Image 1 (cartoon, rainbow, N blue to C red):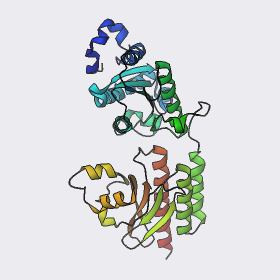
Image 2 (tube, helix red, strand yellow; image 1 turned 30 degrees about the vertical axis):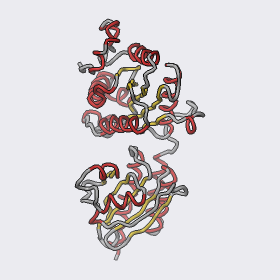
Image 3 (cartoon, rainbow, N blue to C red; image 1 turned 180 degrees about the horizontal axis):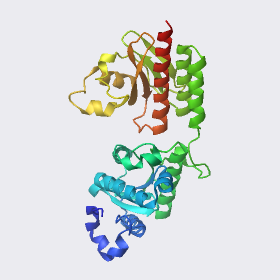
Image 4 (tube, helix red, strand yellow; image 1 turned 60 degrees about the vertical axis):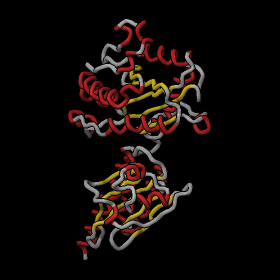
Amino acid sequence: MVDMQAILSDPFFSQFSEKELYDPLTHAASKETLLAFAQHLIDAKEPFAFFFIDFDNFKKINDTLGHMIGDRALLECLAVILKRVGRQGLVGRYGGDEFAVVAPGFQERQDVWQLAHDVSEDIRQYPIDYLKPALLTSHITLTIGISRFPKDGKSVYEILDLADRSLYRGKEKGKNCFIIYDPEIHKNIKRSIIGPSDDLSNLIHNLFELFEYEPLYDALKKASDLAGNTFKTSHISYFDDETDISLYESPNPDGMTYKSIAPKHVHGVTGKYRIIYFKKLDADPETKNCTLAKMMNETRVQSMILFHVVGPNGKPGYYRVDSRRERIWRDDEILIYQAIADLYTFASKKLSGKK
């Protein structure tokens, strides 16, 4: 059983019986409790943020491994969410594999963004090994839609509707992301289209074709153009000790510029790739004034991924993907960029073998 968060000690909840307070499966707050608490805050004119949280591809788990395993995974993930949210909000089950958070006092976009980011990252980094047969990975991701009272709506219905629309917008974008409702951007959201707009299998097939038939640099350039346009990336490049090649640049850089960086300044990327956030570098006294942090600040790069590659001369290098936004990188994005890096390395070694 998951320990319920301390927020339920609020005198408001004393009017409910234990059966009314808790969802019978997960022992998170019930849907009725969530909605009653949201209405209570509205009546008291207290601002809050409402998060709709959906577990991505959860149907595959139930269909492949069965509902008992699915329920077990839900409980584990819920415990992770409860730990992160803590006293900041009420976490409850809305229905199926969809959960919600009512977070009192959350109104500023940065505060809302940070909580959504932390919840997403905690779940993404939490391994559940028994899910590999269903998902081919031990990690689950979330899609989150968020709205705020009174900024976005004046009633429970409006707040839920806008959070729900934001959630569907996140699914349209390919899942594994969070959307904070913005009327200027999202007022025309429709729920008719669900799921990623790009066929990843076709995209991967095209990448293989490029590296099979195109000259190495042309293949890398065209693959980067294809991925950059698909995922609306800000900038893509390749660099090693001797070269730095710009491969793709967004038609709308929004003030972001490009600047070279040497391998010695990336602080030892381990594994196949490393995700770097400027905000984290800047917040750490040990990295605040490092060359990488200064470069990211000057060029307005908020986040980047560095992939290990090997060039045709056998030199180790990096495939670099920049974003002008601090964001959660989706699994499909990382998959495609990793595929490009791997294909470039494979083609480089093949080319070197011919010499």
